[in-house]
Image (cartoon, rainbow, N blue to C red; front, side):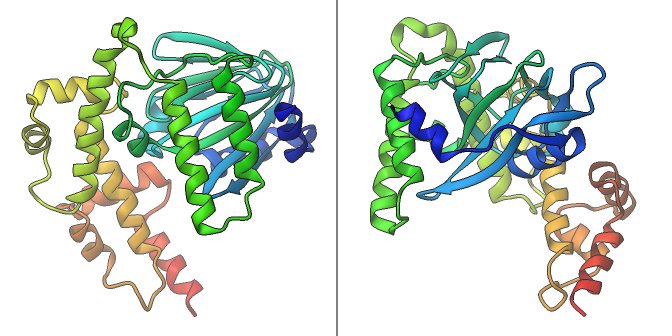
Length: 323
């Protein structure tokens, strides 16, 4: 019954969109993904819509593509940090991540990590699912044991039934602060229980130790983003690992520590440059230096490579928009 209720809450899945329209929608809602249509097809039967319930974002994603991929390039240029809880409504989807393959059907659930390369395969058959955006750092930090990524939770599993019922509750919540907070906490707790790694699954633990170090490193990067002392060696010392170990951890994500720091500084600089004129405090060069870059030419090259425009273009657009 809860699956039918969820489907009713997310209607209109079979719309006709151009591949470009569908791609732009999914990137706006879920981040950078690269879709591949079936040979000869220029349109997609599907939908991409973002909804919110009790403070949690839920993306409604439907398509009849061949596959959708989030690879190293997408992760490097878009470091959105989420765990995606996928709940299938119609059709099937095969998820490939961490050298594992999992196929989910109606009512099944699976967790996917946004910081690891992934592929979602449909083979041209219509698929309709929900993707609940979970705060990645918080989910890992509050887990009493590891979290099983790409592990299928079958539709008939009692915890899958609980998760679907709670998602219905989230989407029909009246958003009152006290009530919404309680539902969110119960939902997060249920996800931890549903996808916890037991003692018998010790083969996952090395990966989880790597993820724990990466979580700490990412929090330190965010906290000290513009400071000159933020280097890979300084991070390794703070995490309590050797530089080589931490480098290997990040290599599992397809990025280097330096590239992660650089990308985050570039995004920070772009946000600064895009601020309304009356709030912006400096020129392009000043923003670059305050963002942790010591070489303005290098900053300009990196900025153009990531955002496909010059820093001055962003600043000019800001200034024009404030008139």
